Amino acid sequence: MSTPGESPRIDSPGRSEPPADPLRGRRAFPLAVIELGTSAIRMAIGQEAHVTVIDKSLRRLKELDLQFASRLNTLYATAHVIEKAVVQADLVIGAVLVPGASAPRLERREQLKRMRRGSVLVDVAIDQGGCFETSRVTTHDKPTFEEEGVIHYCVANMPGATMVVR
Image (cartoon, rainbow, N blue to C red):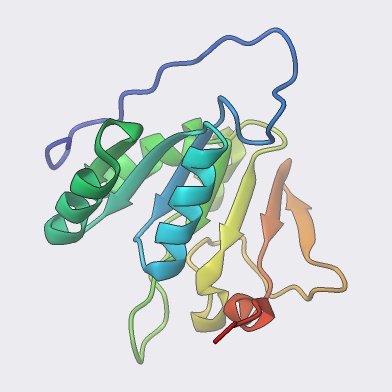
């Protein structure tokens, strides 16, 4: 686990052929892990993405370190760490939840402008106003939009689209 304020360490795989899995070799950054974030981590690791989790809860980061070991990089959330990670990411999943309040803004338009074209932001916190400055509510009929060359997925009530089997 990285220490507070430490910058993420990211190695680029330098592939010449397109990956077989959509996330293989990509850099995914779930921010503020809730249960949905944990599912996203499993999926991304399963597709051989380089996954870094950023969170303010040291307890949660330690749990993830124990659960995923060397398959996952964890970082304590600071403005500097988030900014550095977001501009390097291919996929950012904002899974911030503050019960009874609006989601904090974790990404600003200035950071978005520095991201690679075609990168993806998934704003799971869109029901609480969204955690990315450029987020706006989308629907399952038109789930994405592009802003500054970055694809946004901000479908309201995302968990409601998931079938529950009991």
